[in-house]
Picture 1 (cartoon, rainbow, N blue to C red):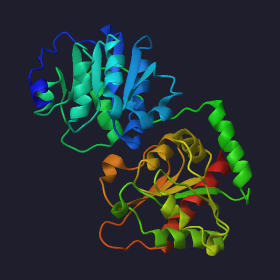
Picture 2 (picture 1 turned 45 degrees about the vertical axis):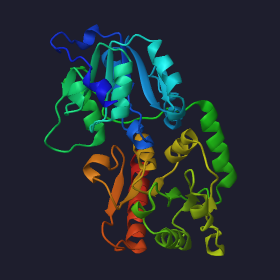
Picture 3 (picture 1 turned 180 degrees about the vertical axis):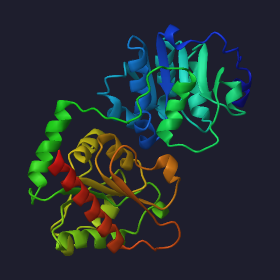
Picture 4 (picture 1 turned 90 degrees about the vertical axis):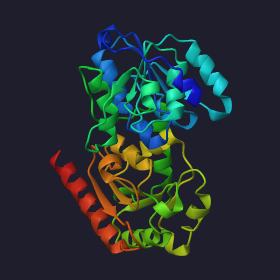
Length: 342
């Protein structure tokens, strides 16, 4: 691929103007959180120029969360096992510009930008990017939230409308499925529904399972909330450890689709989780969240646009369940007070 990138022609950007664009390919072939935090870009493009045709390229697993997004005209799926299919779809369109949102150079995203055959290619400035992009977005000296890094690409391209909040949209079928699930599983309808996700993509990045268990036990013992434990792919063994007799007042939900999970979060009073992609679903749903960070940059990847508390445990095991419970109660209290004043 390095040879292919080196041969790419890099023309001048003097004649670029966003109001002359008819078709855009926005590229974000990354994990769930990255895709959720890119949704303000799609709204900004369409609100700036409603007649632009917007195509978004994402991994297969992220397609579902964008299906009902009214600002997207077409979704192209990147499947590493069937790249030729992706390329055939890209070649069937005529794009005026390909926009790569990654702050750090992504050879995968650049590869698709090149193969889109778009005359304009926009992405962040880097030694590698200069071989691909003819619209080079300068990097800010200060680290920003990822939503702002995404939107700075549009600001550089002079799109007039910038929407800053991530947002999700759901089909009625998903809503009915989740409402039915809640009605079936809920035991204490008068208590706030709190979702707890103890899993994380990398084990060492997660708060200890025993700490989650103790936190849940304290919430149940003091009747603070109705607890649903949620899980992601491959977390079955971890979640099975929560089926102890002491947790008989806790509901363990079966694996849900991303869209079902997102709407369940929207319907809940609070999400408790590690720093992982699901945290961004709460941001987009504007559901309060308590997030435990053991890695990563909070300023760039923390919750946004919702009430939230971020607790850090960077070295060792120094974050106690009691501290987490106290902050959960604080968020629930804030939520109740807000509901009373609305």
